[in-house]
Length: 451
Image (cartoon, rainbow, N blue to C red):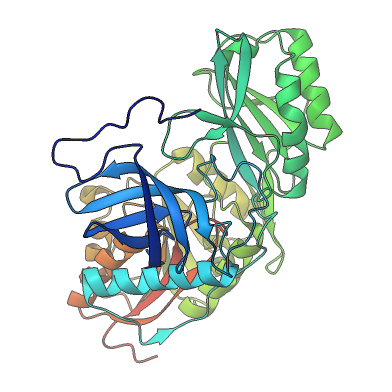
């Protein structure tokens, strides 16, 4: 879809009009991988550009001193530029860094973490640790496909959100998916067009792992023939088909006694069962490395009392309990707490207990006492300012912070630093190659702990 049909629109105080073409030479990269250049004395961000390139760009947004653009044509290419392997790269809102080498991607992510720690907290770690890395492509274990019924064309549009748009880009392949899911994706749009109930589909989630699944959210009933078509597609690829009617609770498998989705941590010989709506890490190779690093950095000792906050289905809690620590896991979802407890039982781990609490509310976390020696927290993107304040007051010896947002990690690091904690070490984890997402891990130690 062309978002710039018609005459370019200029806001009264803007230096450029939306949709206007700007030619410029790029000097460096932003922390999210956009090129930076200058035009008529203003700073211009160019999505899809590399340093040293001369590019023709189109304006997406314009303010008085800053213009955001997208590269339409590369006039003089950088020798670093790579041909994106995905045919949907130009439109899809997912993997925006496929045009740059992996090492460059890692460098901007490491710089982003360092800059945020310095900007928000005036900190740098005592030790910068090497980045955790895995496969460039074929790593993603989960994906959600959006659906839109085009009434005029009487057809179903299946795909991902376009970049900076609510429109969908139709996809027939996705190179960051693990092979089994990519093969399903290649066949899925054609089959969905054949369904009697195609106009009432919501979204479809594909899940790999130990018991791969295809979860179909539908807003109107599906016919028995539709059930059969979906079941046969899933079975051809070794997946279980699960249906989830609107507001009808958990997804139900079409095949009898189908096991729930699961994943393994092979290094610990642990298996984790989860439901379709539960949060789990989508990069299995990086998740294993992340757990191993967390164990090495936090170093939970036999008999030591450890908190695992935002524990999910037990991804960190179970390995720490296996190492001999006495672990208390806290999670906001009661259903996930129940599954974490089941996972501990299935893996024969008795030294771990799970509780439900809203960790964003101070009154829900005041029960944390001085009996704990260490804590691990893996909060959502908005971080955990009130929680780290409480942990700091309790004088835990070691706090390991796993972050999906370097800005809130840096903010919370400042809170810990003001309370006497030292940032012992930090590093990025490239959980989402080809994207600008920055995942990081940071270890804080109390002033009394000289380890």
